[in-house]
Image 1 (cartoon, rainbow, N blue to C red):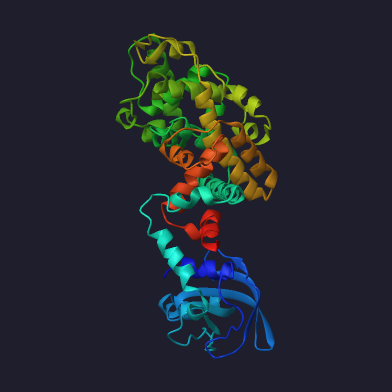
Image 2: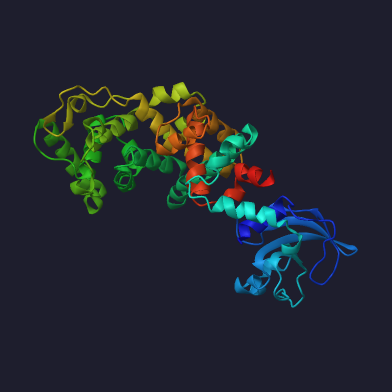
Length: 423
């Protein structure tokens, strides 16, 4: 038995309600189940329940056994004083609130169809990484769509937390936060964290003072990255510039080391040197990343703004003094789309929540629907089960569904799992 199953029973009222009694034999009539609470505190908020002749408005707390109330120390927590009904699978002892009054308790074990419990246990016991795989084809298209919508919303909120953490560190500075997030994603997974550390040592306000001089921006970025080596005229010029700015802004106290960057099994086009050069060019071409990403409504306009070509030296080199066999033409379409998905969309999701403005979240979703679906083993698994995945919206939702629902067997928080049990 799990609390998740009892949550399901209560939320969808999947038990016999014809003659409900509390453990003290008081008649129970459920008028409103309440709102599921995903934060700290009671499990369902703003419920309405009639106990005997009196109607109560308050919260519902759910446990496997009544004694779990004390095991979780709710008797000492004032947040649980407004619990009007304690819903449990099995009642094993009377429970008191912090003020000493007894909490009315409803036991569900005797009111629940045992076949429903067996069906749930069978679903959780499946060896398949997707528990409902054998029954997935029988589920309605409406439930599948609703599941993907729910999963994507959760994924966007989760991704927006990365932005929120940076925003808190930057004391509410959206511009600095956007720049750091963009720099992080210029690392394209392999070098994302070291790119973020580089950005944090070089405040955008400092770089913007020199955004009309690409050589100086390159000098500061390459010098601070620890990748700068004096091997030719270009690198010697950068070193001279960097030494000046390093002394002026005390940069060498936080300089990175060359060994922190990962080059092994990396294509030359994705070398950190190339990405740093492209970031430098982008800094000189945009006055405000935050305005660009939050005010641009066309995906094509965003792509054009990010379609930069690095300086001539880095079109012909992939490392200092090492010439490339093929000239690089700047950020490619796939890289630009990757930056939009991992930078712009989480930023819009976070800004939407902070400003309480749904239009930014809607735009994030619209952008996702305009990208083709990525291909990986998770997406392929869903496709093999017959799930239609055409856009990045579908792909991102299916990844979230697998990682945070299927893998964790949260079937009762998924519309698909709920439909299977209700059939």
